[in-house]
Amino acid sequence: MFLLSGILIIVVGFSIGLNPLLVVAVAGLATGIAGGLHPLDVIALFGKSFVDSRYIAIVWLVLPVIGLLERSGLRERAQYLISRIAAASAGRILLLYLALRQITAALGLLTLGGHAQMVRPLIAPMAEAAAETRLGALPPRVGNMIRAYAAATDNTGAFFGEDVFLAVGSILLIKGFLQQNGVDAEPWRLALWAIPTALLAFVIHGTRLLLLDRRLKREMAR
Image (tube, rainbow, N blue to C red):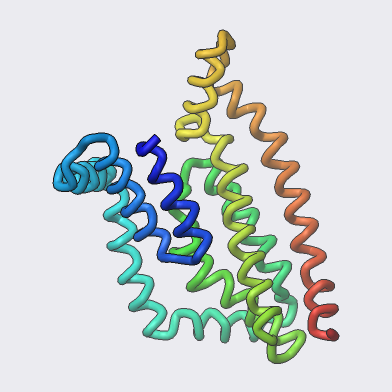
């Protein structure tokens, strides 16, 4: 039962709002110690996992670059350019990004988008600037709503677009699960049948984005 102490730490840590990275690290350390490992051995396993997953290091290389771009006025320039386009609106900008995100994910180019690389420094500020041009200064609740829609757009496009690509981990996971249960399905067939799901996801979330501008008007009138 002591091996389940990590789960308890995660539940308690997340419920009281502690730093997620700290909570997960402490939970992993507690689980390892409960399993009979020396604390130094657990830390060594953390380091080995980090080194084996070298793509994690790329994130730490990208974040300083994004920070420097923001400090140099990336967000402000994006907002300025969008504010000069009369036809731009928050819903239309996010709809365009949804299409681009889903198409690039279907081609296997998942790293072209993302919350840290695209949504925070570019997409969300552009959508907010378009809304401000049409509706005026945005209260915090409306700005947060636009940011939430921007994040959801990235998630939807990436999640439903990546399954159309053959060599993605989710396709291989589905194939392995089906094979273990006696169902032999080729990866190309799984990717083929992911296309209708991706199209339906685009239609559903795209409709929500087209209705976003009306919702923003109602929120501003409150």
